[in-house]
Image (spheres, rainbow, N blue to C red):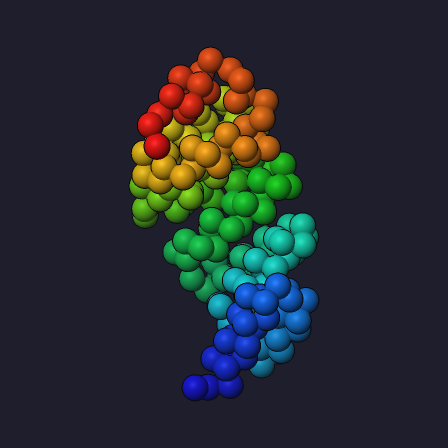
Length: 167
């Protein structure tokens, strides 16, 4: 096992143990040795997202995408960061990049629906949410408790498209 692989494993162990700050130190150590190490950049972006440092997360994902323009995880997580920044159209375009390659990806569909609803495109968002639930039934319960759907979950449209679906 190379030193980088060993450090990646150690960083993941820190993450699994609930210590993202220690993991960040390790990922930074990797990036000092290999500034464009994709896994370390992805993990660092993830930690920034957990810490609500979304602009820094986007920066990490952009570095990944510069090297690997088809990295679906980077697009998915970059979309989430933009969503939390209130940049819903940018988030949607990130999810669309994932859906171009994997049109039935339930996570990309769910996240896109969330951004659509938050941007005021409620019917389109609920249609896509219903579609995501057909691929992953657990998303129905998630949507019923998700903050992004709080404003619409009492509407007839939500109940017809989401609540009435069988799990």
